[in-house]
Length: 281
Image 1 (cartoon, rainbow, N blue to C red):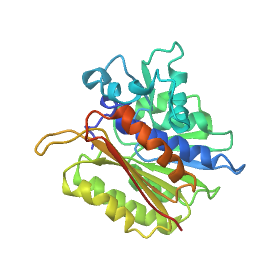
Image 2 (cartoon, one colour):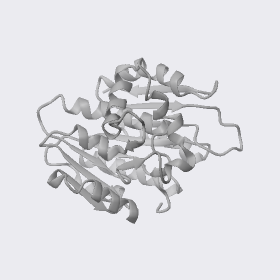
Image 3 (cartoon, helix red, strand yellow):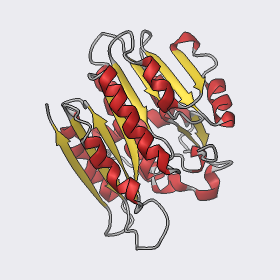
Image 4 (cartoon, rainbow, N blue to C red):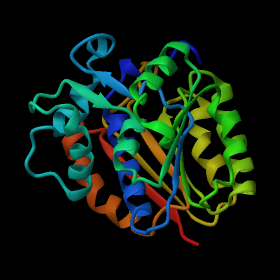
């Protein structure tokens, strides 16, 4: 939906989960010498200020990355994620946050490629500007990433990670994610697909994980992080999930070791919890 701006939510608890998993997925792909692509279907602006503009209206990062920033007891996976944020804050004070495109770009090697889609006209202009010196390694497209993904699959190196994280502000986003993944798996069944989704009371949100499990992928992993209780009739997003199709075999162990610590670090009340389910091929 064109009204959505991720800058209002940058660095919140959902970003912590999403980007922690993203770092793990890219670092696993890098273990082989062969190049790979990263496709981001809803790239946003790429970089966000936390001390000015939209982010200051809600200050959601204070319940996310800010709770981890100064801690010295970070588990390895959390430490790797936090280290991905530090280059934007060279003076040590947390004032900026990288979106998924920037986190991915910083981890790519010379032969790897990044393909970015963004529909919002203002954000895509900012995104393109943020990557103006990246050359041919990064391609920014103004358009619907769910529609554009099909033409990219299978990618030339036959190795790719696709991140799908729409705003889910309209019911069509839920249907679009399932349809897009079904088509993607038919064209490129060995690719890794990471879908972020919100935990909300609305029926389409509650049913999305089951629909993703029903796609018939050979292996998948579904992890959620909830930071607080959500009383009936109240608004807000108490948590989110990451559904990964064809995950690295190492990811489940890493998350089992990491998520209890993350619940303690980001939890706001006794409703804080995580879930982790998987299917292995």
